[in-house]
Length: 122
Ligand SMILES: [Zn+2]
Image: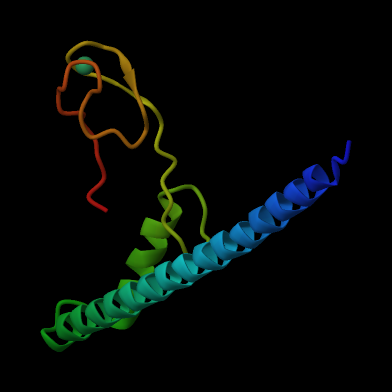
């Protein structure tokens, strides 16, 4: 009996699967590029807003750039490292109501729903 068709069937399935994988990869790459473009756009927009706020504060005499840089360094150091970034090491916190431990990014207790204290503004 001839079973050559089995090989042909599996070869067809393999090539179809490879083609689908290539299409999926291209689609994922497009989504990633779009997400990156949106993030860059959002960062550019935020930079504009921050620059505008700083300019307005200086124009109103609230502070000057050296004073601002000094405070910025203090804030930068408040996370333990002077590296031009603010990345506080959020630790898991205990719920003030039930005492159970919640994740470091939790806003409310996942066990009882109580508001967790000490959340950063930004
Ligand atoms: Zn709780």
